[in-house]
Image (cartoon, rainbow, N blue to C red):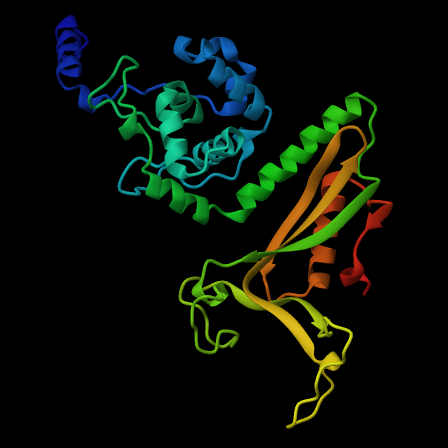
Length: 315
């Protein structure tokens, strides 16, 4: 049983039926590991100025600790990490691409980024790089869908790590951060016909009639003000239900969301976002204060001493 005959037969079987003993492909490093070990990168990646530029931009983030989804689950095709999608969206913003289609074209024209971002390579009809470029990328529709479906916890992790890197860089230069912060909210209109004044909608501002175009948006008021006459003459009093026109409360209502942001301005350096939270538009401004300040204190390690807030946060 220990003769060379059996060993040689096993060797021939292993060569003939490689599927029984699949060769394990080396795992591609994440962006942070690739940034730390540039010498291990393939030549077509290490020799690309575009790939090296984005490696310097994105590599310092701790991608290896990113809350990732289950990549072993059978999604019907090879699972793509969240990190690959997020890094691609960062490139879209940095390159100023107007659409996901333009982003996909840019990645196809720079195939070294496909390898660097970790998209699974398809070897059907291989080119000079050993993989097919268009089929190695998700479709534009799937890239758009994943942008909508990314978990907020993953994006908050990246924001927190970005704050860590900026503070560490400024601390080396002796610049203190986080002493004074500012907080404000900004409305985000939902892409629904109820927000289009040129479209007739019955009961446009009925909060019980949810728009079909967005099941999560809510109706809210951006601002209220008293109606005033534009001329010097006082407005005419209506014949029925007489009420002075200057006491009528006029509001601007929209379906959508509101994003609350806490920022810190560093003189001669810029203004940096410390925390962000988005809620449906029916939430009041004061509901943003305590959750955002708790995150700011966690990321700074201390409470800010001063704050610049508008009248909505007087309470």
